[in-house]
Amino acid sequence: MTPLLSVEGLAGVVFLGFVLIIILGALVATHAATLIRAVTGLALCLVGVAGVYYFLGSPFLALMQLLIYAGAVCVAIVFAVMLAEPQGVKKFKRMHPLAGPGAVAAGTLMAWGLAALAFKTSWPKAATRLNTGALDDVGRSMMTTFVVSFELISLILLVAIIGTLVLGRRGRSKA
Amino acid sequence: MDILNLYNELQAYLLIAALLFGFGLYGIIKNRSLIGILISAELVLCAASVNFMAFNRFLAPDPVVGQIFALFIMGLAAAEAAIILSIVIAVYRNYKSIDPEEPVELAG
Image (cartoon, rainbow over all chains, first blue to last red; front, side, top):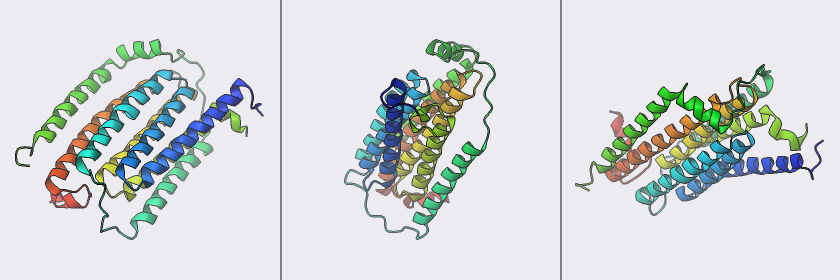
């Protein structure tokens, strides 16, 4: 048993706090009555995931998670909520009677299956590690092994920007 | 099991990812607005990233690949979110609603 008042014990407490934040955030994101609360839950959940990335030995990924997800994506969703449902979601009339229980069943079944798979499988450890996975290794690998994918990502982002502009522009004149 | 040492266990991270995936799937099926579905889809993508990072930390011979993959997932998710949001706004402009049942006539 790790003593509570040691570096490892406190790190464990912080980790459990992040897990709690993730679960709370996911609950809020899926159950909130209004969309703006759901976005807040999503942001909370993503901050928790950033903390988990920190524990997985990658502070850079944690920073990127905060910047891109919790920052940019959540702000974009908030903008869309402001533009599309400014007075909150209307009560939707048609709701299939099986939708609620079916959703619960699908979610639990999937989560239970994945968790069972995680615990049943004996994961083989790698014999040797090529590097430490530090930031300069990431950068070197990004510019050598994965340079084509890196360029493709920038192309996809360009296409996404142009597509978003076209979609947002269309219909503005007649509206 | 030592509950304060969970952060050194691969299974703890896989369990977090499984929970996130379950929540995301539940939200995608249950939600009654397009933006809510997008929010749940972000949870699913996050679960995939956490899985990649966990395997990267504990099992991978080259502990760079998972980080780069998670970065690519982040970039793709940002592009995907931007496109979906512009589609949602276009749908709202034409149907005055973001109920996914409304644009069902587009199915042809």
